[in-house]
Length: 509
Image (cartoon, rainbow, N blue to C red):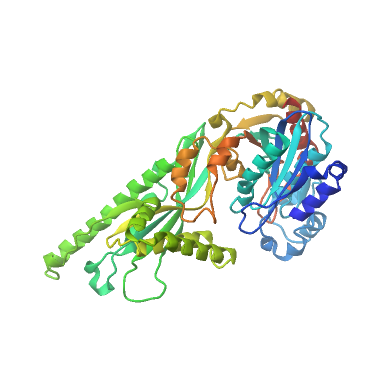
């Protein structure tokens, strides 16, 4: 897809005459997927970025229609030949304003609008920078590697980035206001690993089951309202567990010594990830304390019945630590820690590149390996961060007022199309906008020190992002059923209304 987009750009008359103003950039993406860029030069240094992603999700869900999933005209025809229970979908199949197909809304329509604006906008003063990135649907590695590209192009062409528009589809009715989204929720994946005390199941009071520790932690974290964020009238969903398992590789009669859970946590700018980690530490301590209490209660009952003697009771030392603290502990305990870590990082990186292991499984492997060589011989919960990390962002948080370029936009659209625009502080989801600004890179770096994988595999360069701090808007065409079999986009938005919004903003820039 990157080659196709780049080929279309190179065939445009402007870029035929100015081949030095377009190219591809391959940063540190582990799968070597490039970012495509093209710059239409203006007379001054004011620059607007038009960004979209060129990846899409799978087509397996189309079933018998899979052969037509990437052919919008044929897909629409074939759709009418199968039994459909969804009345709204049937109505839209009869409406020429709707185009169907995998990725047609998310994200080909956005790329098409951006490219059309790049090729046709008549403003001679403003620089228009087209950016097409991979991997938005997974880890946003394209947006992350673009950060270095923005700096390179800024220096090469003396650019002053005033605004970035990300052309994501919008889930609104066609008569509703076009949303001008000024921020994006943050997300991270706290991964907690419990180490118990190994023992035979028939001698349970000689040890402590890590499965019990992790289960109690999940019980207290799942749907915890302590971890909800609320900002500007927008709120997040509470945390939920995504991975939950013990780490025994075979069956035997012993209790699991190690168990792990990974959670999905959403947040807004009124909560920092570090503060949420403190919440997790408190909840994990409460959970581990309860497990010890339950152990002692059960022991007391067994002792009272004469089944066990007091001298068999274990007096457990316990601890809750972060991954960064565990690494410091191992560094002091293990003299060859640096070479050990280099070998571990290299092994995990090779396995990830060869698709033998996921980033989350690599995270689990790394944390368990550290615990095994740490010298810790008592129950402990370690809290780390598994990829991906999406910072919470909002234009207001970086002190950028972009109202000047939105002046009279709503009135203009209402007069011309009978539809208005409205500003929205946050999108309730994850987007590439997260990597356009950072208001507190020092605190974010402290948080990122708990990442379970080295920077060679995954990192968010918050320091470089904060040097850019580009205000952003997310604007796109009305769409329905994105990622589903009925994915479709409203073509009047693609052809006329959204390009008109873009051109109006560029005019006011």
